[in-house]
Image 1: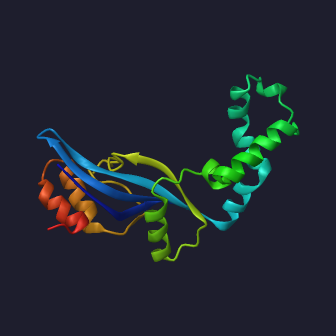
Image 2: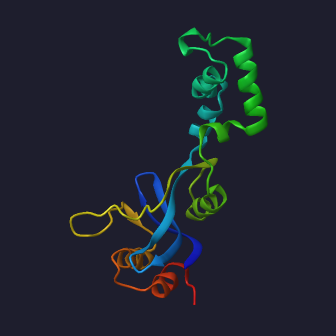
Image 3: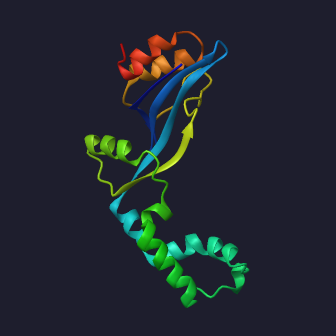
Length: 173
């Protein structure tokens, strides 16, 4: 059984932790899943869209595709430059430089928080709510939804039901 949704839970540094589901598959296998996403500033976005930075990111891919040892690749190679330009034209530099998983939902949350951003970068996902400290709590710099976090911690510890955590996190009835 699984309940899905999208709720901003907390922040650690520039990483924001979102819960996207709570599940119970067996009596001994239950938990919460989510994504760790950060907003990409306009300055970082501008840097990432510079062709030289995209070329640096894609050099190993190009070399492997063309069986070139990267020390033999001339950065000014016209074929490499054309290939990078095509990648940017078809996929966009942000798709190459950032992981856009959950970008729409996360972007809406960042906008609601008043965070200026050009796009988002997902750095993790899955069972992300397991960073426990010695007190048995998860450590965050800022918690946006205390009720949901406490319910997730209790559910991960096996202390509350799926119905309870679903209502606490997603407001499901």
